[in-house]
Length: 287
Image (cartoon, rainbow, N blue to C red; front, side, top):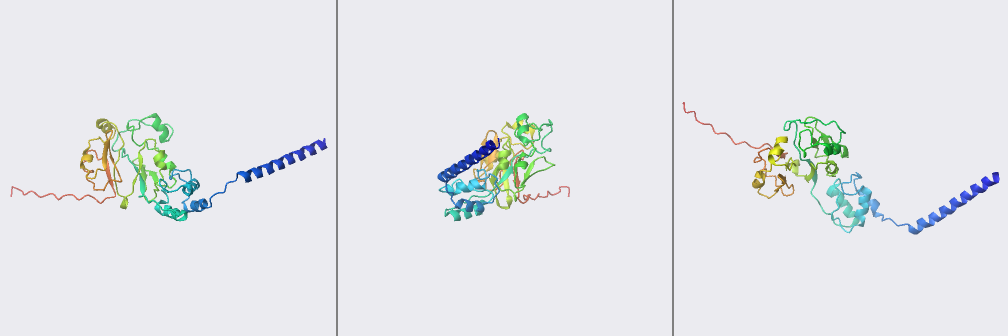
């Protein structure tokens, strides 16, 4: 009996050793040499692994950068132009500079502008709530306020305002990685050009319903009147499906579109207060 056990152990050891030898030679045969520049490029990247570049992590992005012939379509939003310049220096290529961008929440449906019509008591995620109902204010395009965008942000750049019930982006922390854009089931969050002093002008509404219906659910909804479109001297505004859209790359921040909007759907942020024209005194005829 003991001899059987000994033979069995010896046999298993022999089989294991043989398999190890075979695997060793197979590994040697099919081994591929990794480009040493991949590790160098990876160290030059910020290491956020946020996926903002379009790849699962910085390691994957480094591999793509090394193997690609140019940087066309390749950009690290977290590291920005400085990081891409460093990578270009390592690989001996030319970096393509891009203008910085920032996430913008295109909804202004705060409680003061919409009435509470329903109350949601389901799973506290925007993704699930979006599939179940239009929203507490009745707008099927409005922010659901359950914070899916906050949960996915790795940079603490978004927080929920307890008063307005809407997410707020902190421009100084936002890296434009796009995680919040992908997380929003209603497509409310958009990456827009980041201007000096964090100034912005945008239509804070994505409702494509007809004017009367949109305004019934939210007082500051875009009603598709086209007045802003006509007022813009730079062709930065387009009209599509009852909705105005301001192209941040074309907008010159002239602010001419803001005062003509009848529902105040266009927001201007980061600007000094507008100058009010002095009111002329009318002479008292009784004197």
